[in-house]
Length: 299
Length: 227
Ligand SMILES: Nc1ncnc2c1ncn2[C@@H]1O[C@H](COP(=O)(O)OP(=O)(O)OP(=O)(O)O)[C@@H](O)[C@H]1O
Ligand SMILES: [Mg+2]
Image (cartoon, rainbow over all chains, first blue to last red; front, side, top):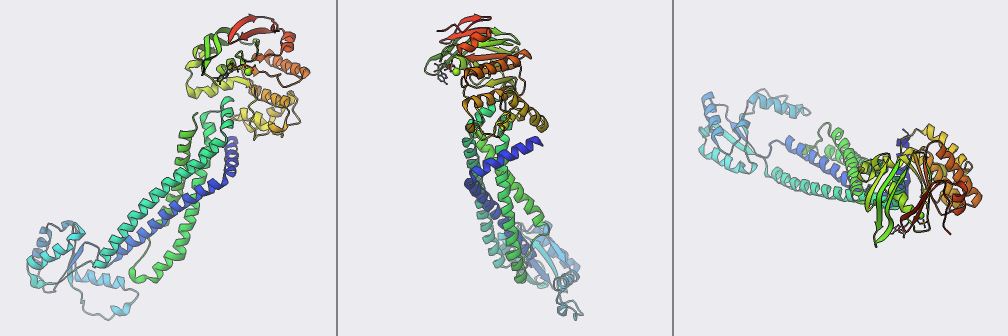
């Protein structure tokens, strides 16, 4: 307890002395972690949008007429499984009934769309995924040209190219985001380490005296470690504040007003993201002070 | 308690600060280390607390060869040796109380013990009324006494004092050495580096005289002996 108080007092005195640098370090920590939070939220929102989309990228749906017999179904399924570009494990037979259930579920807010249906107008279908999304066209062509019982195949549909393009764009966005976060995190670590170096330099005489009266290396190091971790933690708290406000004031409203895009956040996203940002701040602070101590405090 | 065997310290620039020093100081002894300015007294003390390393030779403290001491053990060696530095080495941003308390804090003593013992010891050196002053608000002699208080607050088995009377008037200087004598009488080994002739002559202790880094005289109940 005694020690905790001592370290806290030392840290506070040191922080106050180079407040400008400390604020700069905290700001960069906040920016890097804030961007991390925004990228993760955007990423989550977008993957959910793709997941909720009618067809996934790489998905091919095959609609069948109601006249198709069981033998014909078997032949078609065997043919689909034999296409090399198709991931055979994903081939799924969706019956008329299941399709109707899904339809009702999706439009449960607009019962007028299905309330008065007495005969199920939806077809049986096969859904499958290609091993590689770019092979969708190849697979569609093979089915058109070579499938048995072509008269039973009513329609073939694949994911819209718009979604595909969006996914490409978002992939780029994500990559740039990750690079930016990593670069900023490195800068944040260096800046924290600079503030610690300045603190060490300002107290080098004192440190010498402390050693001479029997202070251990760790007794001397702790206040600096705490100072770095404190800066990292405050930075991460600012980042959390920013991320939460952006979510509440902007993203949640976007989700609300652009419902047709089926944007959404995964449940429990914040419960993971917030502690991660906090941990990131602590790690940045600890690495920054460790780097400064390793290089500039020969004990 | 302290053994030196053929200890030589050469600073860069080929300065021989100590040369071929061999001696034994027993537990509980009181020793004056005398010699003119530049004769190697401070170097002698720096070697004992491992602030400097000898160029050659062996130093033993309580049968431990401190040349071979692991780095992480050095703080524990220093806690066994109270040291009054010639330039005091007080922490400028800490009060008198905090400066002395610091030496207890590093060893993990409880707040209660610190609150109790620090004012006691400061009263002993005549600074009971200056607990909250900062070092630059004190006279040289007062700073020196803070340094003395810090050096023996942990009751170390060895006490080194480098010119502890250098900044005080003669009567106070005698008081300080009497205080060191009192500490010595509780079993602490005390080494006082000084070139204060009056003090050395008045106390008649063992005198080790240095000149140009060599021991030129080692005498029980000796006198200062230089002119
Ligand atoms: N860090 C150093 N680098 C180079 N030379 C040094 C260093 N410290 C001391 N010396 C030299 O070593 C010699 C002994 O110095 P030391 O400080 O031990 O003397 P001293 O007996 O304590 O003198 P004083 O009575 O003036 O305090 C001197 O010639 C001094 O100039
Ligand atoms: Mg000296």
